Length: 103
Image 1: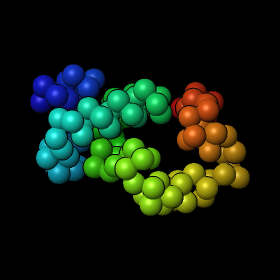
Image 2: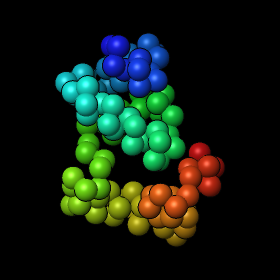
Image 3: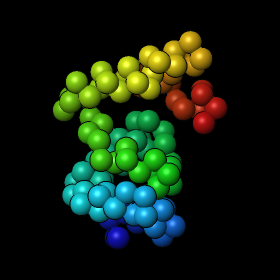
């Protein structure tokens, strides 16, 4: 639990995530802190959001480690919504912030 607290999680965030996807408890400290760092510092997300979108912690988010997953992610979540949210690719590539999307 201490690792999750250091990553900015509250007790409620932890409980919500555990109730929905208990597998996230098997994450190593390195994976948890690395993923959290990427999502918070590079993607501009708040740690509390991971409790609601807990499966994201189970995926590899580093581009250099998994280009195939990156392409799938782009196809499913970015390219698919390009017409509705044209600045999404810009944000995904690190050239903008989620604030541009109103999140």
